[in-house]
Amino acid sequence: MHDLLDTKAAAPRIGVSQGTLENWRVQGIGPKFIKTSGKRGKVLYDPADIEAWKDANRFQSTSEAA
Image 1 (cartoon, one colour):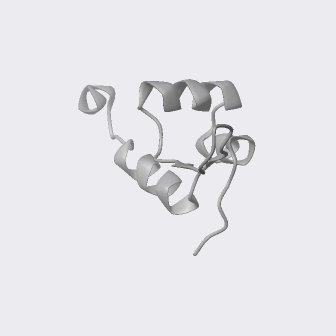
Image 2 (image 1 turned 45 degrees about the vertical axis):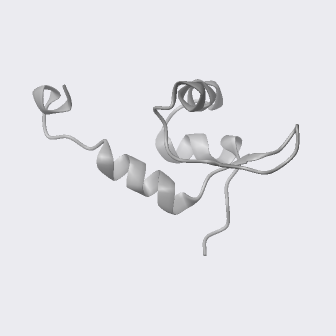
Image 3 (image 1 turned 90 degrees about the vertical axis):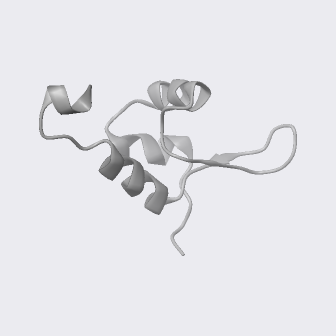
């Protein structure tokens, strides 16, 4: 199993800022994440989920992305 990444470490792997990744999480459009228990639980990302998300969002043309 891979080491889990926090938002600060995950964002550069996707090529976006921390803020963008946080916004995507709220909107449900970013990679899958893990939320630890508790009111102030941590948000963590599995590198495999990041790679899967990147693969699912890889396109050949702008018309294909639409």
